[in-house]
Image (cartoon, rainbow, N blue to C red; front, side):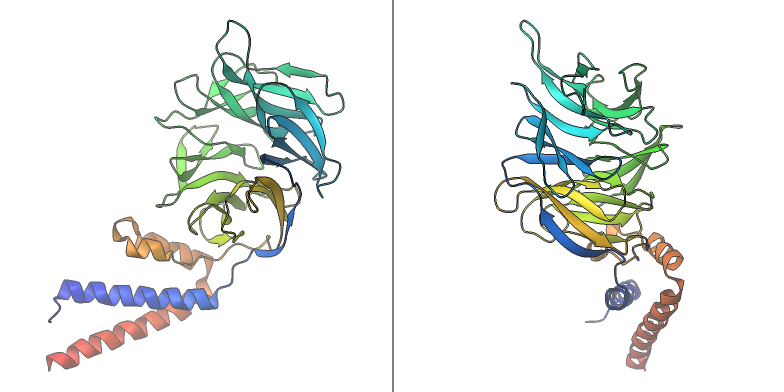
Length: 354
């Protein structure tokens, strides 16, 4: 069979790209190293871990209640519990309060999810700060001046911000689908979130969403690390939901958990060397942590094999530009290898034509 010019060019390009991938995968090592994975709780339905600002405590939901424990899993204490559902807790920026979502149930009133706050030192000191439509997933800004949350006021879950007492609420995103739980950048000027399986950011100043990761996988729960250089998230790109880390500019990606179970709700500790998450490894969801090293280095870029097979979604120019910016020295090695592949292919076609 004789190949036309277009087919030959496509074949050469794909062979060159595959050669590049092989070189990249063998020559480049991911910057983030997994040191230890540890299970902290051993109950039923433990979810949504969040670290205290000093890294000493972790709050989480257990069944239908809000709990807190030491970062090593000791001294597990129930903070708030009623007959209604409570979940999605997070600490205030000073570590004195926990904000959480709860099902609001009153006689002769419709049910909705509201946001409440409870004082850690005095668990009887609690108050409701939102009303009416469903509002949930509260998380306080690093400077303690705002709370980002999800609200159904406009018909589906969008991201809003408000003062810690519930006043002066302002809508940040407005899409036809439900946004996922927001997280703050360290400087408090940007929010990361998920939407329809993709990862996004939005600056509060202009409220213009920017997509970070757009592929065929289900990517959720993005959270910035303390210095803002990386984002941890959950993704099913490995076949089931695992924890992954990428550079916050979306270049480079590294798998952190490797279980056949489901891993969700990742959260960085303030030091940036541990990630807490929920996993149903063993059958029931419990809280785990994974200890990392080499987190100060950027994750080096590797071309995504899945995108190469899906030509319509593969932006070759963008991928090459990103890799050159991240690894200029290795780019020279790869260009040399790719050039050799192309030269061999053209010589072979030339000799066949003689």
